[in-house]
Length: 132
Picture (cartoon, rainbow, N blue to C red):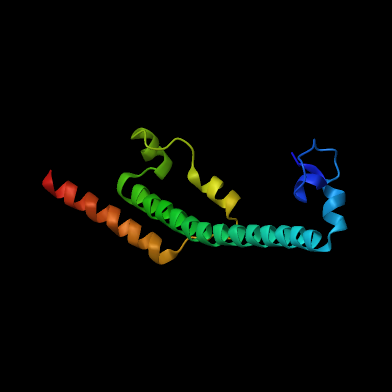
């Protein structure tokens, strides 16, 4: 709620009679400051969105690659799809891939990461199986 022109100029506060916009436009430096503030906010918003997209995109690739590696492991060692195994262990209900692809449609599986995940799961399984 604005105080009106009199309060802004150091006079007594009065009820907001809607003349704040008229006051700002009557003083060029106030109008310029308002325009600069709006531009700064818009620019900052654009930067924040770009950072979110770029960092999220890297995480999306990591998530897709980990899921692909888990899938390779579950199909090769267990004979089931990864979602079946995750649901059996009550770890995950929906398939995460559609959600990741919806948010980051350009994200692709990184083959090196996927293979690394597959080897990691397979190694742990082999060590577990040796004990039995």
